[in-house]
Length: 234
Image (tube, rainbow, N blue to C red; front, side, top):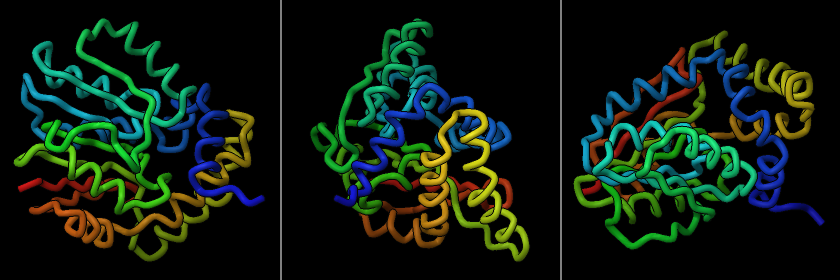
């Protein structure tokens, strides 16, 4: 029987969790950290606020949000892979941040009341969900009026030549690196498919608006291989 996208993605992350952080650095040439740092700067996170990191994986962005909101704030990370969360839990334990909660859950149906958070983020996870718009609507639902929904994700370069190089890299080199570094060729082959098929920057901005978010800001990184989308709930 053919697996659903949700089942396939779950299987991928349950297998690659031990090498996930290392592979992120290899695949993005360490740029993902700079992209997240710039995104955080643009978010202008305030002390004492409450943040949710959807598809938190091994909790790197959750930890960054916990530091940004401070001891009087709260950071919650949610992911559907128990193995990824195990890595995140170890990081949280070693960080000594008292204001972090990690939860097992589904981004398609967030287990929170409406208007619960000041910031809701998703980093390199939206491309792996079964329905992009449904997840954005859920993020919009749980953010407070005036709050921010932020997505940092791979994107589609539009520059002639550069786009072709990008596609070749994701199709051939990334799975080979996955096999060499993480012994997971098939899993990283799937990840290149999800990146290849993900909407471009304009399309995703339109989805943000369709989900009910306004004043959508887009920031392209490294020639368009990644992008930040930020929208507000009115």
